[in-house]
Length: 336
Ligand code: PHE
Image 1 (cartoon, helix red, strand yellow):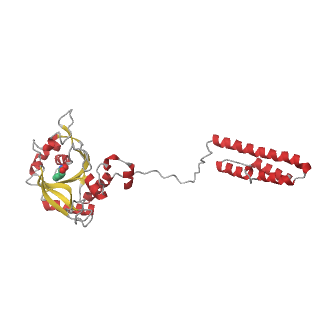
Image 2 (cartoon, rainbow, N blue to C red):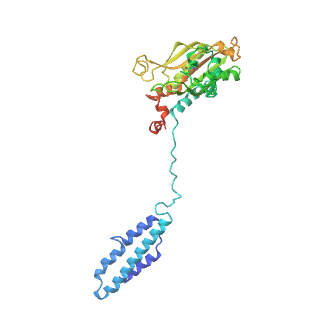
Image 3 (cartoon, rainbow, N blue to C red):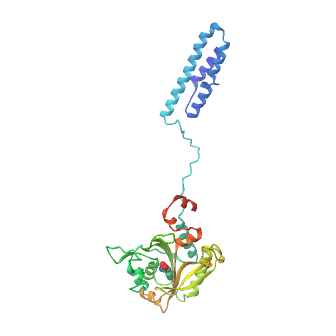
């Protein structure tokens, strides 16, 4: 018994506690019910009666010493702020939370990449525009409804300033700044005074394309759009061009692709037509070329424009355009 007490006392004197883990170990080894000191109390039963007083005092002293040590170390660890975490320099860093790209950015990038492979370069223009670049330079007649307050956001301090309603305004800027051959795409945000619903929003994005050179024909337009559609929607994709009207293209067309859901058989997404409309296009109207100072007897060109949200909705099967503007993390996380 005597040796045992001396041994434990020596251990207590030498013990070194620097982490909360070591502190817990200490408590278990010395102070718990099955700890070394409790075992001494069990041994105590076998001590001859005449020595009980002596050893009783010794063991109690030891217990006090251990308890005091425990309390002191606990307090000093807490003070050092190390009671919970000890810096372990070998631990790997916790990964940073990385966000995801917005679906509109993903599609925009895909579109830009596809046209880059055909030699189109990116150009951007201002969102706040003037009448010339959005309407007049694009052959919009004075009485065209798009010029109405109903459809366009005007900036009232200056009635000539408005939010562009389409990226075709950047076509005009490109034709003013450069001489043919011009082969560019213009991604950007556009604004229309429309009620917000599941299918339309007052802010959305477009990608516009413009190609002007000698001998550019409608066949070139069609082939470019076919290549683009197959790249974006898959090699089985078919396209269909329907006659349409835009003031700045002649002839004009709207392009449909075979339905991405049913492949053309007919379903409720394509309203049983087998096709989905995705863009407007046409041959640049000679009047537009001329007003930008490009000789329409030498040069011809084609242009097209598409809505990015619409394509994102088709590709990712998003039912409501508003999801693309609300920035709900639960929605956006699906694109990481
Ligand atoms: N600017 C047209 C629109 O917003 C699309 C378009 C672009 C049509 C280029 C023809 C040529 O609807």
